[in-house]
Length: 168
Image (tube, rainbow, N blue to C red; front, side, top):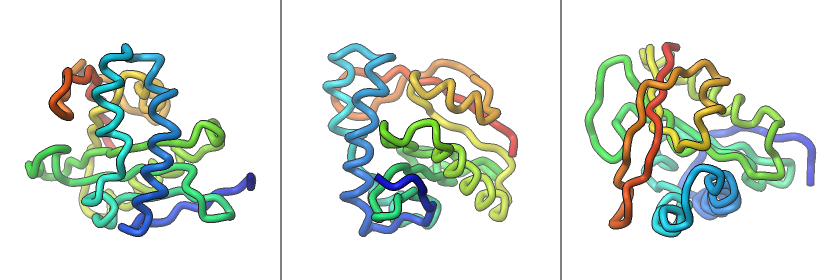
């Protein structure tokens, strides 16, 4: 495994690599915050790359020297799951880091790229509907917890999450 990574814009051709990364990342990291029944319902839906994000130009992938996905994440103007847009607000979306690449600055670099690009589009504030296990990551980036929320991500149980926000 190489020791370095590069961040680039994701494309639809990254769908398989991003899905593999999400499948490697989410089951283990989310196990600390969710029960088995919730994970069984949610994981098949959230461990697939979102084609709209991959085509958006605002979703990024971190790759190692062999072009293997080791991190991903992005932002959108639209509220996740809808088309509502609020001026100067954007939403952080679908972040993950491969478990073997944790604590190497990948998530922070992906976030930095999101913030830099979003500012150029007039965004002044980010929100994120974060999984409970990700709260610490976002707080370390300067987000503040707003409130607990419940997300419907499919036909199964609601997924408890936390809404976090940050001025940029």
